[in-house]
Image (tube, rainbow, N blue to C red):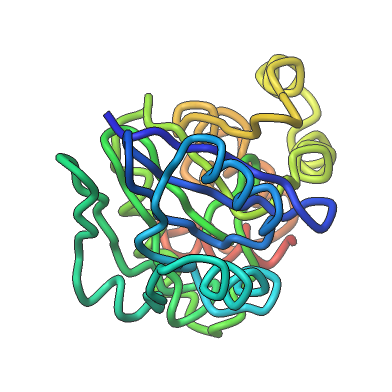
Length: 233
């Protein structure tokens, strides 16, 4: 089974190394010093440097990692085109995730996903692509995965996202337990957690629909509710 190691950099960015016993892939590797130290201490060979999308805060470590290793650069679009990244006896699945940006992708391995700025722990990314319909389809696909799936995001926005969730649904009993389980050294959630606390994936929940109705926002269809909740951020 492949391992995922998370690294924090630039206050709230999150980088990842996926590895087996001998080989590794770096994703959004801005924590270059820590990643190189980790690779060295475990005698891991870095095969690929890749990213969840092309924004500079996620690609900032690419050059240093490439210069310090024999790894090759795999762009998000190229990673999505290949669909899979073989790693030792396992495979990382790569899926297009347009919405935050047109080139956004997610990385899946068993019941773990690295989502970049598409789905955070408690919120979602801004729709910089301008394509809300694509973003809607991307999130629908993610939320169709098993509820036990662990979400590893591109930033730690837990405190801010739960403050917003409390404003939206002050009586939501799941927010405090979510915050109690928060670990700044290993930031993660499950898709079931997201269904309980994340306003941006709860647009079909009766409580969230009431919130939207009170604000006079359209709620007639799934997509209208999605547009409405996205307008609140």
